[in-house]
Length: 362
Image (cartoon, rainbow, N blue to C red):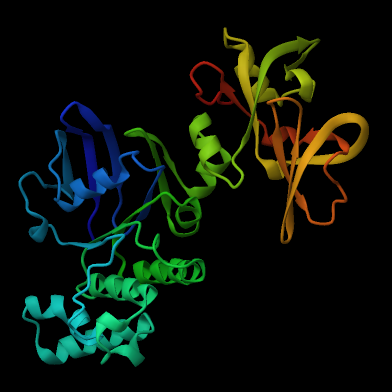
């Protein structure tokens, strides 16, 4: 296994800075997802790890070895792209065996490994078939198998499931995690799909506009976003963010949110953090599943109700301001009704209105 250390890494293409001072340590055998919208720098980061691009500044180390000037072929990495790279004139067996033959392994070892990975990826019935006749789903499974079979210390995957159907993505999320556990590889997975990152990764590195916004376990990043970008990007729907101002009533600290009224008193540690700040303007954040609605005459208007299987997303508010609340599908609320909004005080997260940075409890 191999650790990866990105030290003050930057990358520019002419006047465009694609990556701004990336500092990230990926431990031996860790599964890290680089998560963010298109153009955030995640694929550029992966290309530099692979050796396809040279950093503008900073360095990349595999364990204690500096990768400066080391070609992709000598880095010991496996790479799976969004668009599968398969030799369509070869059979499934020959595609899987290709990398092993390049390494001049004995035919008996090649046969053993091909059959083992084919069994793992459910390709055994197709080993003799020509790759050109396979579906997109199977071709991507084959591409993953062809990279995994050589057992690279580092496995890089750049949006490998974006071109396959939803049902197959669900299957492959499980298989990729099992594959990584079996071979104990250090795995870096680029995706814009938060579900892929949340379900597979040991840690998530959230990126935006070439800047690493936050790293942490999926639960940590989801529950305690570092800023409003992370808060809104993670979650389906993302975190509700209501503009408000800090007010004090007696010994309590509350947030005045205009048409949404005043919040419940903030918990002690968060109230202390808010009191210590000079600015009063904040964003009051809470996850849609951490709130409830009850029908109330004269309350906030419900203007849209999305029924999605076992859950319902209720949109509530006035004018341009609105929040989303996730409820069970038997809640009885309909568009045109009015309701009272209640938020779990322990689930509230506050962000500075100017910088967007989280206000941490003290």
